[in-house]
Length: 126
Image (cartoon, rainbow, N blue to C red; front, side, top):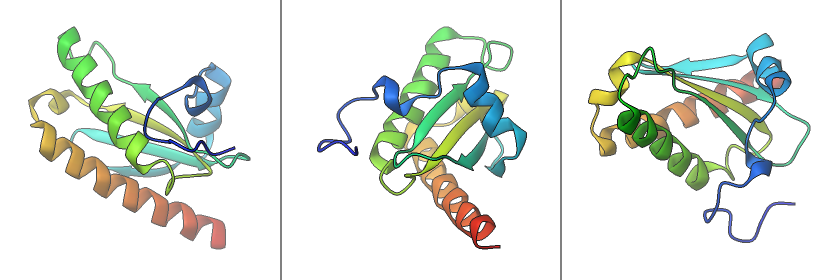
């Protein structure tokens, strides 16, 4: 079920769409975060990783900045979705995210994916 070209699109099958899917992650999450992002994850019953975004207008006032942040998160997720397979992930954005440069944002997000994957593996083994 994993596509041949996983980095091309962010189709519906890779998204958390319903409130019930978000609630599943929020109920018992594994957390990783930094000063401007919190990433929550929970194992799913699928062979793929799925992503949900929460970029509130209260935190990031400018729509252009909200869209830039969402675009960067989706891009990073597409490049890392094979190593995140089997997880439902929700990314929560905090107020400082709009002031971070794109390369720094992507590097920090890669570190969060690594930390999250290790924590999920550790929680499954115990």
